[in-house]
Length: 89
Image (cartoon, rainbow, N blue to C red; front, side, top):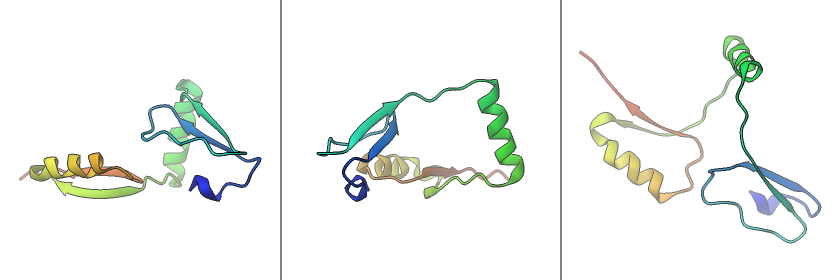
């Protein structure tokens, strides 16, 4: 996606993202650390209550296939969360 950013543009990404974005001529790449605090959690709770919080799911696996889920993560390019389904009787 960085290839779609115009020269002079900026890309920001949270520390810990792998692989880290590679430098591109004419594009500023900025890493940052997330901040947590009372205000941030209040904003998160408000978003949840409004129902406009979107969590993309990249894959869903039954618990007995957790190894397969880890393989999917190791393969890279996961856009979203990997979900393990836990079923109780």
